[in-house]
Amino acid sequence: MESVETQSGQMKHMRHFMAEFGLEEEEFEFYGKYTGKIRLRALRNRAERKDGKLILVTAMTPTRAGEGKTLTSIGLSQGLQHQGHRALVTLREPSLGPVFGIKGGGTGGGQSQIEPSGRVNLHFNGDLHAVTTAHNLLAAMIDNHLHQGNELNLDVTRLSWDRAMDMNDRALRKVTIGLGGAGNSVPRESGFIITAASEIMAVLALAESRQDLKERLGRMIIGYTREGRPVEASELNAQRALAVVLNEAIMPNLVQTTENVPALVHAGPFANIAHGTNSILANRIGLKFADYVVTEAGFGADLGAEKFFDIVGRKTDLWPSAMVLVATARALKWHGGAEDLEEENMKALKAGMPNLERHIENLKKFGVPSIVALNRFSSDTDREIDWIKEWCEERDIDCVPHTAFQSGGAGAADLADAVVDAADEPAQPTTLYPLEDTVEEKIEKLAKNVYGADDIYLETPARKALKHVKQLGYEDLPICVAKTQASLSDDKTKKGAPSGWTLTVTDIRLSAGAGFLVVVCGNMMLMPGLPKHPSALDVDVDEDGNISGLF
Image (tube, rainbow, N blue to C red; front, top):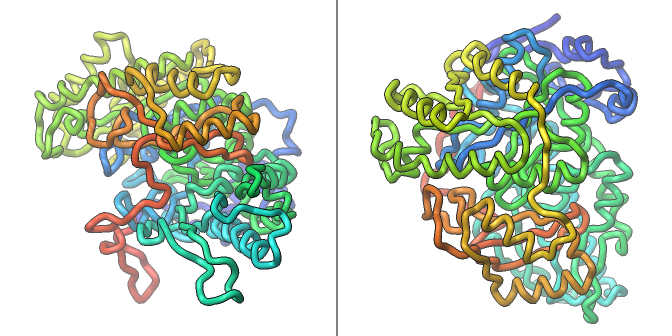
């Protein structure tokens, strides 16, 4: 079978994986030799096949550079394969905003990354562009409706559907549109959000079929009438056109890891401003083809992991058999106040342990066996690693260091063995609140039991929004908290495990299509900005088309 050399190994042709999975020609759509899409009929054709086990990878509160959660997910899948298991990894699609912003590429690194990484990090099979286009098509249809007479009596001051763009551009957060005369529609204030924050991205990730996709798209709230009635996208008959734009994007993308473990990379909602997991369809398909499917939940366990249980698991009964909590000595030192994370600093390391401890205690509340995966950097010392392991052992917590960046699957073999053992233990997955709770009760339970707050406070706009949510009858939805990923609290400057603070809710937004309420906490932006030195300054392409600096 044909293969090609990359910077980290050899890629295998998609036909290799078709043969491995037993995929027929009509069940697969080629996007070149080394990537393609699995058609949804492949899942329907295997509806009676027994599922494998799902492994959820999450993390402690990360530094700005991240702690290698994606790297660990990829490395773990390779470790499972190294140990003789049939493994697969499911991941979110990288957003161009972070790729050219702070974090750079989102495909892992070293000997544990997704290939072809350049393609995945950039315009990967057009999925994010399709979500952006669908979002902006709906925006255009709304403004056209206003221009053509506003038959629905929409209140132009209460439209809730802005534009979207898959790039960090703070200058577009607030804009004025419709200027230049009557022929250019109705002048009004609007804005842009990043594509990953679009409700359409959440809908794509949560949809289970094309029909489900259309129904969810139709339920999205675009604004309110002058009488205060919510207006759905279906009232513009927009759902069918949006589904057409997303016709290819709904199919999960098949690629591979450095060591040729199959990878389904699909959808890309952020976990700080959305629910933070890849698509339900990718996970369902993966579970039909592998004994162990490794998936990740974005940012720390207070965000992605909690939302996996309270939103995704509750809706689908897709429950993990084991969880992996990624930790690093670097992050522990950062939470302990260290500035130079490359140097050994036992004092800062010990001072940062409360953050890890809080996340460990939180994971226990989900009722699933968990392991601490210690992602080892080359600058970490034996003394630091040994101390963390001893700390965990004293508390009867499994802690397994790995070197998946340097050694690929071999470097994650011990972690894989521990995960297999954990996945064989009995699990009683649970959610953290019943849907019958009031919205305030749901927020309070997360604030006190997960974030460590003493109380919650709803600012006036949030109280007004909540009153409206109750009037509309949406109080029984799960909540998706939008808050900073840099702290367990709603203040990005508070490290460790803050106590004695109040969670401040600034707004509550209805995502009726996705099926949750977005609870905005603190100063949370839906359109990020670029840092002083963005990753865009470090990338280049040569005359042969070889890209550098992206990973």
